[in-house]
Length: 484
Image: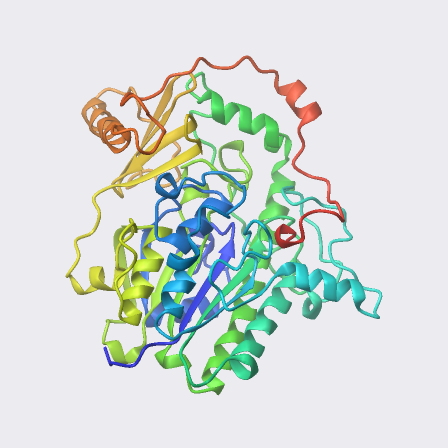
């Protein structure tokens, strides 16, 4: 590594699952620029969101802390959870970096900068489109922010939010940044989060492809299915979606990912045009995944693979000598981003950080973590508490209670729940004890008395919940920063 501080580009997508990324996705998926990053960098094949929800993941990126440490485990305000003087951009600003956030931040209040010098949000895109003299307006298809039904964009590709986000990053690199100091740019795409509404040619790109069907575990329709998952299936009504509709939805989802990838190429070209691409440190990841009908579920939040397993690639500057094209099985998460970027810039992270420096891990000077934990729900009322060692995954659900155990080596789609099965008792007990140990001191608030919590299964009527809960309906008054 040279003494020069690297320029840093953090790219995030929203709701992109691991097996919808280059190298892990289907062979037909077109992601040439993500693949270029993989070939020139390090792919972490065991990256997980430790609280698979938009705001908790972003607070972890900004603080270098696990969700159970920073305390924001729901989609609520970020003020009070991100210390301005110790946030990721503030740490880099203290070293002379210019810092910019472009795209979806999901901070609350919306214009909270949390240490960034400048911020350009989707709200600015919608304001720009509202004032445009042309007749095109985005999201006039009527699909909501969490529906799996596919739709087509109501604006041309060049006027989509994805294209606009890339264009703002291109302008920052080429025109707006201060060329006398290094920059940290967070380029945050809002897709492939629903609505699944790619423009042409991306809408049609995969409709004739061999789209994989959703994975449905043998446990889903059995009495062993955790009550929390049964309720989520009913809330999202995802079990009512036909195979043909899910196939179309998945084709649209892949189209959104390719649209992001092609637009990402414009950002890389801007770096190349300024002679910066080879020596820029680039990280690509997503906040969480999307079930896409797996186990009859939609959206995210649970620790199952479709929701929690995410793409994660680091492409270091070429001069740093880290072997390109490396694949690591180390367990990594969002909390690792701040310590990694701080170390790359030449400073120690704030002492409260939970994450590790992944560059030190790659050089062998830091040991990999043995376990990675995840939680869902709020402290005092958790929906689940889980842990994985990279091969085995154990999830404890207080409601019921219920537990699940999966062997990811032989069953990567989690089709067979081994909890309670003969021959797996020891593994389940070891991981159950690891979950208890993680929360035993009460600091996380998920097991305040040192014991795994237990709640009776709530009486529930799926038909009644479907009548009063619906994830769709688009509104013009929806918070603009989380309109996708």
